[in-house]
Image 1 (cartoon, rainbow, N blue to C red):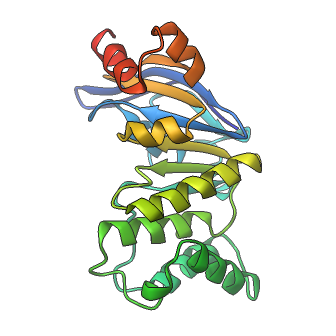
Image 2 (cartoon, rainbow, N blue to C red; image 1 turned 180 degrees about the vertical axis):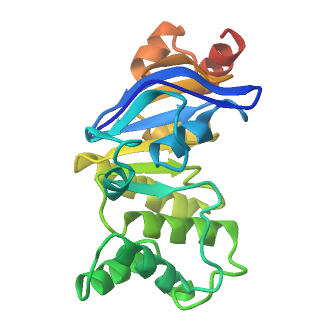
Image 3 (cartoon, one colour; image 1 turned 30 degrees about the horizontal axis):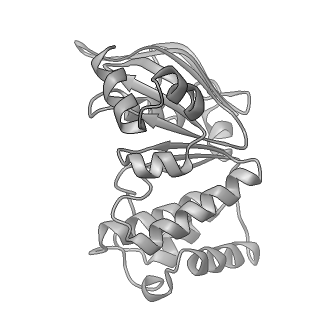
Length: 239
C-alpha cells in the first residue's frame, strides 16, 4: 500500500504540489491523471525517492520514503517516463543489471530475466544494445527491468507509450494478473481508453492539487455517468 499525506513541493517560484493526499490500495490499479505540468511526475519522483517533499510524508508499505529511501526502493518497481535505459547494454544486460542492484543472485537472476524476455516478447532484441531502440522497445525493456525483482508496488509512467496493439493487450492482461495477486499499482497515463480498461481508482491532479478522486464508479455517479474523458475535462476546468 502507498500512502501520500499532504505532500508539497516547490521549485523556485513554481509550486508543483500543494498538499496532495491519497492512498493506493493493494490489489487495485490507481490512475494518476492530469494535464501536462499538473504535478504528476513530481509526485511519482517523490514516491520513488528521486525528490524529497518540502512538507508532508509518503510511505510505501509503511516505510517513509524520505527517512528510509533504500528500504522503500526495494518494495518498488518503477517505469519512469522515457524508460532511461543504458544505451550500451543489451536488453538482457539492462534487465539483469537492475536485478543485481536488487540483490538477485544466480540462478534466480537468469531465470527471472528469461521469463520476462518471453513474457514481454523481447526475444528479437534480447541481445541488441538499447541504443537506437524504438519508444515501444524501450518501454518493454523498462517494464521488464521494473519487474525483475517482483516488487509489491509498481509506479508506471505512461506504460503503453509506443506500444502496438498486441503489446498493449499483453501488458494490460499482465497488469490485471498482478492486481489479482495483490499488487499495488499506480499508472500515470493520458490515454483514457487504457485508464478505463485498467483502473479501479482515479486521482486527478491540476495545478498541483487534487481536483477529483475516488473509484471509477464513484466518479461516474458524481458526474452523471459521463465518460472518463468528460470527467477529466470537467474536473480540471472546474478546479
